[in-house]
Image (cartoon, rainbow, N blue to C red; front, top):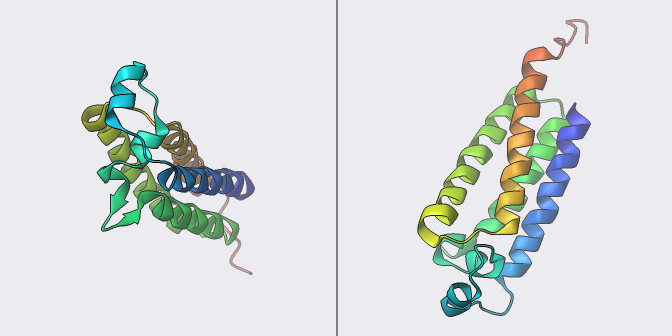
Length: 138
């Protein structure tokens, strides 16, 4: 199970790097979002004020978080993996709430990242509960 979590974590790192590239791309304007009639605009979401924490792009925190999840999963730190995935899931839901109710525009990268962190959280929780305990002889 830890390898599946690690693969999803690596996919999350890739999605976060793509979101970071979109953050530094040519600026999107609000008028373009309104005129297009689409509810999907990754450039606008990733360049909004909600995409930064004290000037640091949220995608950088995503890269760090997914990297931590990969390392914890490969080191078989089940409880820490569940905690880290839970924090990531809570923050992903918070960002999705901002997209839905404040920006009213969705980012493909944000939704993809939310799907990945949901999968990682469920897999990590299932692995913690259903995996056999390590033997005492090790």
